Each structure stands twice: as C-alpha cells, then as structure tokens.
Length: 545
Image 1: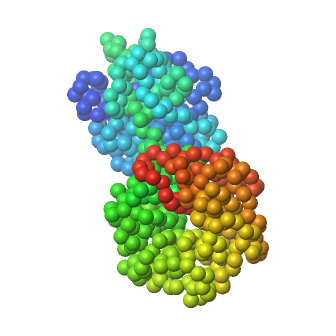
Image 2: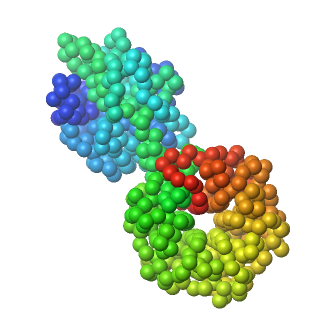
Image 3: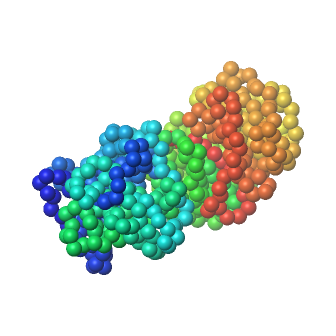
C-alpha cells in the first residue's frame, strides 16, 4: 500500500513488489527521490515528470523519452496494488507526463515487461523538438559510477518540481536488474521511481525501481542506507524497437526469405530497424517458404507466402503486432500447378495477388470482407508474352499495374478500375534496353509507378518511372547508388510518398536506400539481419501506416 499523503503535498511514490519487501530492501511500500544536486538548466531534456491518478489519489514518478512518442519508466508506477502485474493497454488511472518544455501530455498506452519493473508508455501526441535518449547496448561493469535523475523529494523538499541528479556506483548485475549505491549522501527517494540511470556517455542503462531512501525527507533519520535497485534496459534493444514499431505512422515492413525460413523486420520513421521475426513462429509452420510478398492495408500487413509444398498461404500482421494464422489461399482462390513466384499490392481495402504458375500469370482479389475471387489467367485478357519467370505489382492512380518478365524482357499491363486489362507493352521500347532481367519490383507513388530491375545475373540494377500520363523515364543505372553488387532480389515500396528499396545480395547482405521526393537518393546502408538464419533469397518491402 502507499504511504499516507501529507496534507501539504502530493504523494510522489511507486509501488514495491512483495518480493522486495520480503527481502528487506524497503521497510515500507513506496520508494524514491533524488537527494543530489539540481540538474542544470537544459540538462537531461528527455527526462519527464509523471503524474498518475486524480488529485485525491495522485502519485508521481519520473520517466525518460526514448523517442518523441514513448517514455521508459517503472511498471510499478502504474500498478494499483503492490506487486500487481500491470496490464498492457490504457493506464487504469489517468496519467500525464510533463515534458521539459513544460507541456503536459496524457499517457494513452502501456507495454510492460513481465520479467522486470519496466514499461514503455506511449504519449497521446509526440514530444516534438525533444530528442529521445540513447540506450546503452551493454550493462555497466561493477564499480562504475552512473548518474541518476528524478523529480522526487530531496532532503528538504516534499515536491521540488525540479530535476535533481545523483551519482551511484554499480554493485552487481543480474539478468534483469542492477544494484547501485549512492555516493556520499546521494539517494533515490519517492517520485524518482522510473527515473533514468545513465552511463558516462549519457546513455540509458536502466530505470530506477526501489531503494532504501536514506536521507530522503520523511524517512526515519536512522535510515542511512542509499542502496537501490534498477531495472536493466541495455539488453532490450529489439524489444524497445518492436514496441516503437507500434506507433501510428509510416513504416517500411520488410519480408526476407532465407533458406526455408521467412522473416519480417520493420524500418521505423527515424531510419532505425527492428530485429527480424520468424514469421512461421508467429503465423504457423507451413513446412518452409520458397518466396513471399507483403502489402499494407489500414495499418495491417498482409503476407502471402509460397510454401515448399507449392501452395500459397495468407496471413495478417495486425497494427498492434499480433499475427493471424496462415490460411490456405489456394483452397479459397483455386489450385494452381508449379507456382514459382507471388506479388501482392493493396488498392484501397482490397488485396490483389498476382502469381506465376506454369509460366503463366494469374490474378485474384481478396475483398475488404475477406472473400477471395477465383484465380484468372491474365493472358486471356492481355494476350500472350511467352513463358513468364518474374512478376511485380503496384498500385498507381488507384489501378493495378503489373510488370512480367519473359525471355529476360519486361512487359507492362494495367488492370483498370472497371476490371478490364490493357494489352502487354514492351518496357524496353519505352524505357530503354537492358541486359536480361533476373529480378523486378514496382511501387506506386500517386499516379506514377517506380520500376526497379536487376539484370545480367544480378550484376546491374536500374530504375525507371512510368508517369501518370503514360510516358516513361529512361532506365537509370543504380551503380552509383548501390555500388558494385550482385543483386539476388529487389524489393521496392512507397513509404510516406518516398521510394524505399531493399536488395538482397550474393554476399548475403540486405542493402537499403531511399529515393526522396526531391529525386535525391540517401546513402545506401546495410541492414542488421539480427534474427535471420540461412542464405538470403527474395525480399519484399511495403509501406504501412
């Protein structure tokens, strides 16, 4: 239970687990407040004051911005009873974070850890103009001095409303916690719970959980111990990124096939990536994947995978990060023989799927209601172009555009909104001749359609645009952008109006680059493939909100 609130001040405390009490670390339930010096003006701008509950039941903690949407703090700050597991979702009590700018923002969503006293909490609106703190990637060594900060009590003030800091020495570390001891008389008091623990580089290594409170106002003068426990965050890099990926807004969802596995990773708006998740571990084991494609609809990511058994499966990754179970697409849209490739794109709330089977191109649609149309042979409407080896799809101007590769050459068609198809056109005649095409991807941006190809066994890569007026830009060589690489697969997607391109290479890398709306290209970067095992194969990239 909480310590009774003095009439002259709001209570500024946290809940302490029953384990901590039984261990004798804290003689009473709440904890925290920094007895060290006041932080200099402008210092630690990412640290925020957290108020939980109404005026009658208010309690306070400290939190730290990890980006403009999310704060890291102690999960126990939000618990209604000591030792209670805090559920994910909206806080039970109205909670507000007061930023260093003075602006108060409501906390609307909680994502707690179950193995330590830590939660990431999402703000109702972004803390624009305040940089999130950098997270350390390694636990501090024993004997190292760290800095902590908080808005809690001091030696003389109940509610200072000013950020104070203190210096603490690391005593030990286990899998989830750090034990620390204040130097001199520095201590952590009520209101400092959830505050940051920082290394010499100013990186976040943990958040404060509980302490002895020696020297804090309101604690018995006989209590002189300044020891405390903090929850580690240095080892949770991928978890932090996966939580950040839940933020509403544009992201690049990326699927990569490696060996017989399928993996999903996300590039966030700030350019950082999550690790890659094994899709079959989330959506069900289909016995291995040959290739796959993704499309975004209303924040969800639709995935169509070609299994090693030759059948197509479909699943959805919801915007909240949960996955549905793979369903048999062929059972819904019709069985096809010798399927070799699949491409997907969304048009409105409909999912269009185009596949190559037996050298022919087939098309189906999943309606917003979840119903599938039967596969139709595209050549019956567009005319034949020979045996097809690759296919790519895009939505441009609300219409489905398809690129198919036959005999190493690219052909283009459009499915009008009426359902009628345009006859195939030879892309080389419009955009210029290239060597034999081995991989192709397309991505619509407004009425324009970006086309990216790999040719000459992947050793050359080119980019073109089919404009909304039907004209084509000449193929431009991407060697000056990607460098000298051999591309196994190219995956293009439009994210917030910009073209993003992912490439798997013969030396088992994923390269990523952005073409901005001003037609300039970002530097090409290698993607950290944490979580991926096996030799990289096909890649698909799509923008989702």
